Amino acid sequence: MIKPVDATKTAAWKTLTALHQDFKPDMRAWFAQDPGRAERFSYEMGDLFVDLSKSFLTDDLRDALVQLAQEVDLPARRDAMYAGEHINVTEDRAVLHTALRRKDTDKLTVDGQDVVADVHEVLAQVYAFAEKVRSGEWKGVTGKPIATVVNIGIGGSDLGPVMVYEALKPYVKPGLECRFISNIDPADCAEKVKDLDPETTLFIIASKTFTTLETLTNARMARDWFLGALQERGISTDGAIAKHFVAVSTALDKVAEFGIDPANAFGFWNWVGGRYSVDSAVGTVLAVAIGPDGFRDLLAGFRAVDEHFATAEPAQNVPMLMGLLNVWYVNFCKAASHAVLPYAQYLHRFPAYLQQLTMESNGKTVRWDGTPVTTQTGEIFWGEPGTNGQHAFYQLIHQGTQLIPADFIAVATPAHPTKDGGVDVHELFLSNYLAQTAALAFGKTEAEVRAEGTPEEVVTARVFTGNKPTASILAPALTPSVVGQLIALYEHITFTQGIVWGIDSFDQWGVELGKKLALQIAPAVQGDEAALAAQDASTQQLIRRYRSLRG
Ligand code: F6P
Image (tube, rainbow, N blue to C red):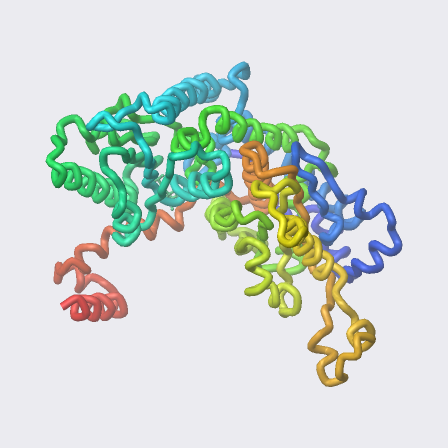
């Protein structure tokens, strides 16, 4: 095993520490004294225009960060990931989500297997299935075509599909609706199925392991609802499951145990992490919704960013620079969180998706060799679409005491060009996107506040210090390819940070503990006295209170 480099012991870290000692961001001066700043710190990657000029980037800082990338062997670790080395050390697995979007003419042999050929074999199955459902050739038990597809999964088997489905609503086949059940709270399943027609509903059970309590419980509840609803209509249930339930999993044996015909199961591999799986068969619901061509376009977007990350010089490499900047924010500027603010309503689930991607990946206290981390890791990612967030939490970003770097994402061409009294509404929307980053960067001085005739006693309350770092990402339109590009961008940002911190960004042992404990506590909740007595005092008290509330 290659040992992680301790970033804090590198020469670059020393340089960064020295830079930070004198670091006084002054965006007004930076822009005034450097007319080339906006252009110099802006980049093009695929369809994405990425303006980092209102971030904390300076030439010195960029050079030191790039040196850090070299010293922690980031390019070599990236190449190792792309080549299928077992960089997921704690699970002894390759990390090959980039293989999911390689062209079918590529070849990549890993552990003796051509993984690109495997990927395209499954893609062909997924596409054939999607075409059948979309064309109406796939029929339900009473011979009707499918009108609603319900994806049942959680975490990576839910967040990616639901986020992309929402992002690409204008591309969804008219007349087809997709729904997503994830929470084991029975309210989720009940609400999602209550008005469905069982004869025209298809369920996709998506679970990498096919052991996840939430997903299997929801799958059983959905199956019970489905069979019951057919029976209520006097329809025979013989052979009905095969026509209304398909599965996506790496554990095809468990799929069969559940009662789903293995012919209706789409596989993937343990080298695809759950949170990196939306572009595997986990995206089957998307292939149905937006069609194989749309899905191919999504994959092409991922691929464009993969190629950029693999080949662009570090100083021009967008995911690398953004990941390295995040290291600067977290480790030197002490930022504890990072906001992602899409100015695109269709991206309203993007921050939630990123929370799993970034926080399940980089929320670690030990490095991949088992030794403690040597610096802070894993900032909190959060956000909401603009402009809604402006009227909620932006106050804290503008004038709070915490530093919150923020990424602003917008598209030029709206899905719904609309005028209000002759004014293009999308342009009003984009004016907000632009105004916010300008306000965060340049603020408002006391003199400016006074010059507006503000009463002296409220002048300081109205001062904006500015110098709040942002990244502005602008895409031509929210196409499947652009959505793929955005996801891959953040995948590689996350990877970059993980390598600097020396952590395994591809395991999630913390979550595994919660999964096990829930199973262990369940009997106590259900009335087993011996199991109850084995719990801690607080848990016992809560269970007793719960049981008395339930009567
Ligand atoms: O939440 C933990 C986790 O293991 C995620 O990493 C994963 O995406 C999710 O559970 C669902 O797992 P599965 O796809 O195996 O059901």
